[in-house]
Length: 220
Image 1 (cartoon, rainbow, N blue to C red):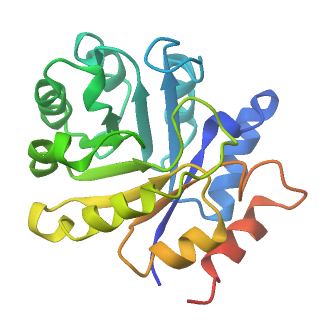
Image 2 (tube, one colour):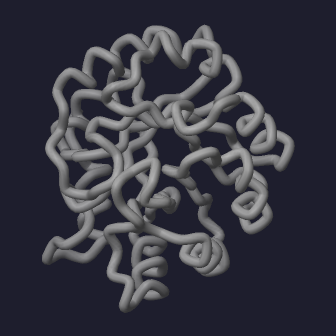
Image 3 (cartoon, rainbow, N blue to C red):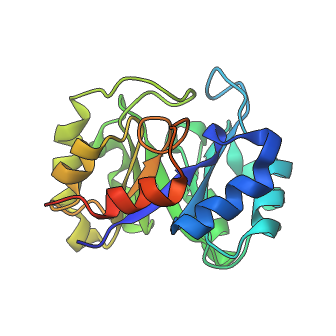
């Protein structure tokens, strides 16, 4: 079964970031997930514009940029100018007065537009944007920190979104507490990709190549 795997780079070893990128590439990672946090929209600071720029320069694989910042429309240009056509940019609809304007800027720059949906955000409140975006990142934990516990009620939201994705032409991605059992359950249902952090990929006594091979060899 085909599904995409993206590495949550906020969990990487920053003392050896170039090596981390290369080892993940060698292991067959599909893309690099970049969590940008401003300390306002979420109560944490994570990766920066410079981190994103470095990883973009160090790999030819796509970037998956997740903006957890307030009012991204006023600052979207400084991110877009350092990305490549085909990279994905996710925004949180609650963080912007007019999120469709920000999504259009992403589209105009040749990037893939996406929205990230928090556990407490209902599908109904983002319905109109589902026809604009190409990717929907469903947060199975509250955003802002790695290593959180899965919130089980998110499963019903994923089921609802899966029933709509063909009609509205978007793909669904999972972010947060992604374990093997979640991939086994939701990849066959139609979730296209999974963001891998400390639950499955980072901080293990095992090469990334072996871990990623084990994930792709899961028996469905």
